Amino acid sequence: MALPSEYSLAGKKVWVAGHRGMAGSAIVRRLQREDCHILTADRSRMDLRSQAAVEGWMAENRPDAVVLAAATVGGIHANNTRPAEFLYDNLVIETNIIHSAWRTGVGKLLFLGSSCIYPRAAEQPMREEALLTGPLEPTNEWYAIAKISGIKMCQAYRRQYGCDFISLMPTNLFGLGDRYDLTQGHVVAALIMKIHAAKLAGDTEVVLWGTGTPKREFLFSEDLADACVFAMKHYSDELPLNIGNGKEITILELATKIAETAGWTGHFTFDTSKPDGSPRKVMDVSRLTALGWTAKTEFAQGMAAAYEWYVANSASEAGRG
Ligand code: GFB
Image (tube, rainbow, N blue to C red; front, side, top):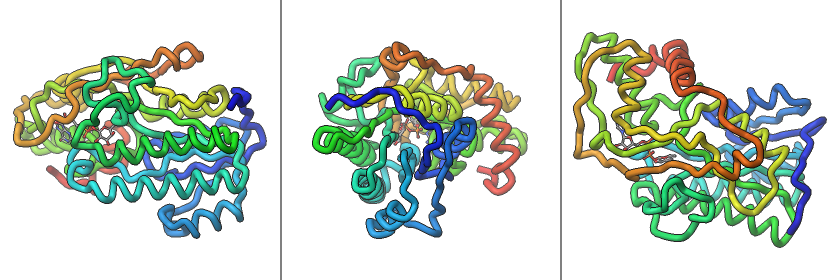
């Protein structure tokens, strides 16, 4: 169904679901520069997995627009070992929010997915059209299936009810407010923790999981947030929209750059009993670029900000590992 592609946030009530996570908190910061009213709901007030709670909250608060950044997320180990949570939590959060957004007449909904929705063997860089063209990477297929369902819900509600619901597929993210957890977190947060701890302890070796050869593309949290606000205003289509910078580096190169940022001069070894996951995951961002958006933050600048955030906010509680 053809919907107008321009959406004005001016004067709108925008609910950011998942405002405490890295993506959601960056989106709140970015929306604070728009002429809109931001709504958030703390986990203690509403469990997004409860349909009754979500429906009640939506009926009471009546947001005009919704950013669905709430999800159960984690790095490769979390995805691989907690399949039930990654599937159930994410499916139920998405269905509750998307369905009640339709019921309460939400004018724009942005659903955040992930680059892991594309097939493991997708042609690189990965185009949006690669969705559902082949088998998924097994370490995160549960999360990917839930996120694919979210995309399909947005498409279905567009088709059947004319809802302006869109899906964005960000590449791997890093930045401010990441989850610093050595086993459950993503690679950037885990390596910041390990390298910072090695620096403080005077250790000369840090162990990387896997072979260090997989390639990943990393986008800074504040750039993701800027892309989300851009897409809210200017994107309206069934096809998901890739969000990234199109640049990839190996895990070993990533570790080396984090070491440079932290000022640690030791060396890396590899625990190949741990999984590598996808060999390569780089986004084709040509549709996003054609719309007029590109990432602004240089990798080194984003990494310095992420490291600084970790040292200021999390390092003391995180323990040494
Ligand atoms: O961010 P990450 O955990 O997940 O990165 P994915 C995993 C890659 O980093 C693998 C290597 O190649 C790991 O072998 N790695 C090296 C490490 N050392 C470490 C370490 O200490 N911790 C971690 N976590 N990895 C995620 C999905 O996949 O991609 C998410 O699991 C999401 O669901 C995200 O979709 C975009 O990049 O493999």
